[in-house]
Length: 376
Image (tube, rainbow, N blue to C red):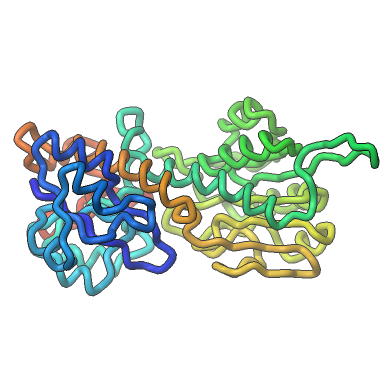
């Protein structure tokens, strides 16, 4: 098996698909690795580290695509890269198939077998492959640091000779992996933390991290998909949520929003009126900015000052911590490859297996994953 690692070319992307650590393990099992020159440089992995691990470093990306049987990437391929892919070749990357149906259509038509890292099912035996959780954890951590940098206040309560400084109040909306990591990080910094999620099942997790869970009496309906993701709520429940959250947003110094629905626009949880009720100097970090934002005033990739409330809609937050993001993503990728490779290092696609079936978006000119039909 020859595995190729091209340098990521999309804007704001500093990660690399496979770290020298994972490359060394693949080489030991008999795989050949071809790396484009400087592919890991932005992540802190220089070419000599890959060479020491047994990879072959090449100057031209065309050599990677021409020789490799499997292409390992972080972001989905550009149109130019799709043209370099050959029929029967395998691609593994974040594809976001539900949002990029044109892209996966091109991969299908090209006869490429494509696997989407975001489509790995959230089941126990696939935990090591769950790149979505790995990246969300980093995003939740970094969101708190971004908020602390914007906020003109201490996080912890401090007793000084000049008087007592009260702790900052942080509200986390969405208690998935990103939200839980944000809670834990804000608590470590000494803030008083509240959190809300439409899934009542996460209440104990929120409380175990030292935060207060906001109970909202929603109308009965399924709150999550079979895969453990939050499910889009009815308009009635969305309005009930906004009405209840208004008072909590108003008293918060920081609001971090993480609510996403796979394949759909992010739900609006914070309205313009809610923002205008916040104290001057307050901060909103909207981790859902790339999918439209949880705040009505969010502008993706920008920091908006609305009546002295800062609304930050950062893009590709995991890439801002490229070293550890690459290390974790690479381990997830390695686990998926271990699942797919036979003892002879040939790819084996058993579509009776849930992991393989859901992760594989296209194969032999056909769409495979049920994720395209039922929204993960």
